[in-house]
Image: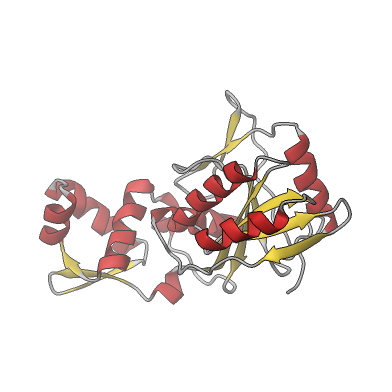
Length: 251
């Protein structure tokens, strides 16, 4: 598998905005993602060094998102591998909010539904659902067939091929496994990154049960001690949130 490095001119960087109370926002697409300001420490230094040496988790063109504040925590790094180049993106899609992505994922996961079905199953008001469905149609994400609404082919509207989450810890590897498991809420592949430890075999045993991959950095290079279990995406509206952010970096 190809390597990626942060120095590559293909790899996208975060929007440079002034932090507010320890966070900044990535505003290319809505909804914006809060980005936690960098916290110095040994884990960050290890992750930076591993990035410089190349991480075996993605090809050229991988988009890097660091310390994004998500409902399940703050992953140290998310590597996003686009499926292909973007074509036309409807202007309305650039203004979608989290509420739109929640309804979008509901339709993608459960199949075509009428507006009344969505109102009843999600306990929302008719006015709110009608507005959201209208926006999703205008964003070229949903089509209406009679009285039912369906997501367009996911392969057309979900542009991300892989979402790889990495959690770095120097020694608290069980904490890393806990966060890495939470990262499966949105990721197709979830790893922990640790230095060379005497207990790597034990770490791999526990990680395998959870479907988590293990990367080991020896100070010079990173090796894959255990590959993670692949998860289908979009796994939640969180996957769509990452997808929309990545689209903002690609356009």
